[in-house]
Image (cartoon, rainbow, N blue to C red; front, side, top):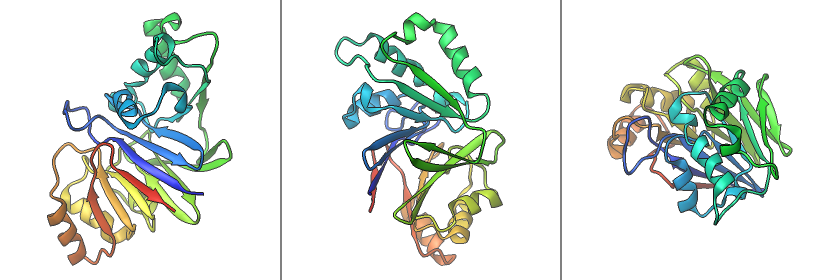
Amino acid sequence: MTAKITLLGTGTCQIQSERMASSVLLEIGEQRVVFDMGRGVTQRLLEYGLKSDDVRNIVFSHFHPDHISDLIPFLHAAAHSRIDPRKQDLHLYGPKGVRVQIMRLLSLFGVDELERDYYDVLIHEIRSESFSINRLQFDFLSLPPANNHGLRFEINGKRIALTGDSHFHDELVKFIAGAELAVIDSGHLSDDEILSAAARSQAKTIVCSHLYRELDEQTLSMAAKSRGYAGKLIVGRDLMSFNIG
């Protein structure tokens, strides 16, 4: 089985033409999972070439607007589009409280605007540190700040780790340690903390995402190497993809 990881959004709450808010697309074998769905991500899905029914599973790390807000335009388009109407059920996953939060969003606009009788929107509250989607096993672990969760899985013995939001902490280092690919929130980390996370974790490839500021990839990479980091440090861009064999 192979996996492809695509950054749909590498930005934050800031409005930027080149960066939509947080989202990562996982394509694992025949399965697709979207991790977070911030502002503008529905447009990125279209640019990537996916139709509404191609997205059947969305996992939310937490409930900040820049991680969940594009669920509304996605559902609205699914219910009313004349060129790409939805026909398949949609599964939404998230930490404790996800059902209440999503039902509040649905009630704000009205069920008739965001749902149709010929498919279901199914909400799954994750109450443990692991869960499965169609036999795919995921770790869903709490990371600082409170209520944020990282998503992690293995493919052919290779670990993939996505942090959602995260501050620098021993838990972050442990979460990405030894990963083949780690997509980390770098907006809440200083350059020094990014370098420390890289050197201590030795993740093979670290992709900096959720960016409030622009990072100098060459400068960071050289500094990481000087600290003993043996992997590759990359500044993420929207629609950048990584293949995991």
